[in-house]
Image (cartoon, rainbow over all chains, first blue to last red; front, top):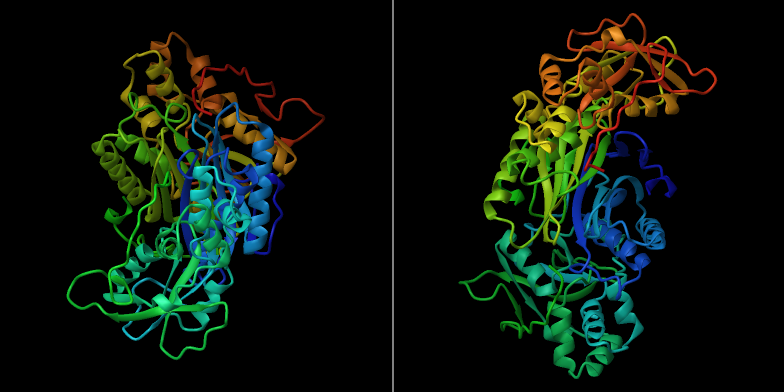
Length: 305
Length: 305
């Protein structure tokens, strides 16, 4: 399935040999891998094959971007039952191709095997362009916490799909086909981000990783947690209010936004919006607070793992 | 599961962040990926968890070696059913660790998810050390065809397991836990190999890839196809003779030996044994011949894909 993908300057040797050769201009390569399993990470009745192809690539190149790196190459393992319609695989391939184009990376290789469980394994590679990787452990008290990308829409889309409610297209689309702000990763690194990560398990949970790695706490400013109109509308259809929309912003999964910490006074481009501040870890309690208080966490069922 | 692996100089940033950072000293990284699916690529009743860990790593780093590269980093995706015994995962991890040590690479990252089907996705990275990758398309008429590693033992081990025959331990071990000659890959590149590949689908089938890519044919010398004693013994237990042993050498899968072509006159170290010559492609017919004749191919059932 890998023979039909366009090449790129980064893919020095593409599919067809024992292994691919991918450029790593500064002598290092960023590498990350994810498995997507049908029924756990996607459902064929909720997402098109093309959507799944987009998502498989997006969530991996988002991790590359979250290190401050530029996407280069992608390896894709495809394990499929014998009765998978050929069209599904073809449409999936188109999604992979198009999301690679959006991210600026190219398919370098892959493996196709049979399995009772449709499973997609993606490994994404990236180029740090000479910069240090932006890790999770560099946040310091006084830093600004900022985000780029859309928070809560994917979780709202998921909740709508679960309940069979036809809600705002933006929410459904963001769940089916996230659109990570790839270029903002290297941009944040250039701006001096002290820590960064891909928001995939919910903002509070993911910022908790930064807090633990950096030995700090984060206080989100409730006045800055402003749900988008589409999110408010989705929550209204789900029977909730603005409070629930904010819950989705801070605890909903699969956003694939980027959250980063920057030294105070960093001039951020407008697509980075401030959410709060890094503060001293203090003596225990919640690592991530909202207006100084523990977040009003509300679980919603996930079939995701 | 990736936190318990030892680091290495090549793994600049290991598991625990959005992505790993792996050294690529000459500005390129070799990259390959494989999926192993329970029931298709391994069976828990035939192979121990530790064997499967070894094999998952070995078949991927063998592909890296087959490009002439030195193993550097490994990413491992692990999709497991909820009832998988914890000990199985722990033993698997030890196999991964030990085979990484044998190959000289280190685990850089991974992903663990749930699935109804136990599935292992491995991506291996490697360093060409400034050399050109040894591809499949460089073989020229007059080149010597040589091999290093053990041919046929894995296929014999598989046939023994299938029929429940307790045969030579070397054959069973080679099937359960192949031992690719990793260092011979970079060595062949330094010796000027014109083409090289990992023998995983059987020697004839794999050399056929070289023939098609290079526009040549290969004639294997029957006098050089000498089965090892353990292979002859296994075949005897299976009710076959020397002819069947040679069939296993040229058509059995999963050897993870390295086959390469070298310019005539290349002085090869003794662990590289000659098997035949590259000849003109001529007008059609078999791409790989044995003593000038089409090989006496004999299929045996594979549950592998």
